[in-house]
Image 1 (cartoon, helix red, strand yellow):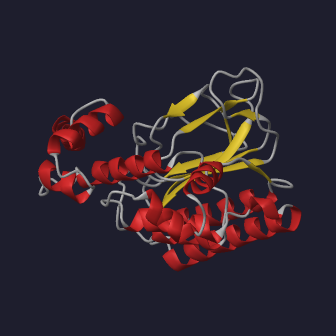
Image 2: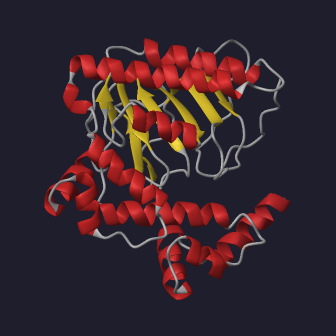
Image 3: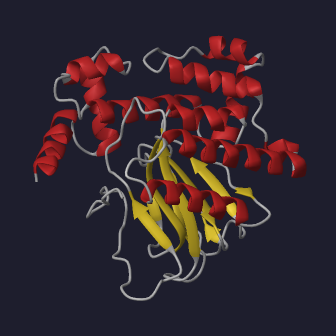
Length: 301
């Protein structure tokens, strides 16, 4: 059975599991290393975990996909005191996207289920099934989410070496089932293929300066309509999406000490290292060099 880590990554507000009787919920962290080249990496799973922390806000996300299901009404907008989404709401936050969530009314009681996953397989299934990203969607009940998380956790914990194909099948079946449920009840939830094509182009050419006219041609619509549709489905502007993708990639590349900051700047679309450092500090609060130094010390410890 894989050995779980003693501490999760810094972006997770963690609490020790209760000792003794089964608390009625599950949580397991499987690793804290982001892998930019991963096909499918299951980093953590929680099932019916009470929401301990109020107003969890991550301006640039967690570097991976956070897929979260709220069993009860929850707050997904900053500054609100009343729940903004109903029970059985699902949200898919992609790498680099801003995250905010909180319990609806009572801490330590209201449950949520979640998984931290990353890799090209995850993105491919989300795109192929046209699942809404960053937009709350309501499912009929929690059975689909909980059953999949139970199966994935079983695969991750019951075997010395988890089978990535089995895990991939679980995730694919879940994505297809969610898509079928949404399409049956509300075809408007489907992300248009034209908008997905624009996002795929941005992801593939993250270092290039996006030209709105070119993106509009790919989408087959006017520039203003494209901007409106992109924000509608992905919850952010095209320019902010590109910056988040660039900074997320830069963060990962800084873990490779063989790559100089100047090289990373060019790799993520900043020929001018000054502009790259300025944007990185604006995003993470420290310069790229200091960020690398801090995390190098943390890894040594």
